[in-house]
Amino acid sequence: MGVSGAQASLMHLHPLAVAPADIDHMGHVNNAVYLSWVQEAVVAYWEKVAPAEAVGRHLWVALKHEITYRRPAFLDDAIIATVVAERVQGARAFFSTLIKRGEEVLAEVQSTWCSLDSDTRRPSRLARDVVSRFLPD
Image (cartoon, rainbow, N blue to C red; front, top):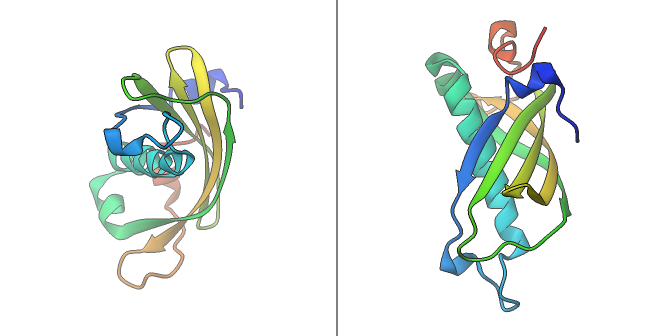
């Protein structure tokens, strides 16, 4: 899951908070919480980078998440999700998210999302100028 120099300038750093309810019976963040973190981070990236008109015109639904867990996270950890848009194909967008505590990688996530028209709820391609805000030419 390397990040090229061109992509590095287009990544989104998203701080994550561990809540007491995130901790499971084993004393660390429950694996299911990582899904909500990825959703939060990817949507925040979209809302930060896309023009307001595009944000209002498109909704996102997750199609697939593939998570590789590396290390556990704990209650007082300072955690950052780093999101990179890998590619866009039709109405689908592919993102990589690294969840880290300092330099330690806690989880690597590959996810596929579908852009929906906010009115029709049907798949909708993103305009080329919107895609260029996330991906280098």
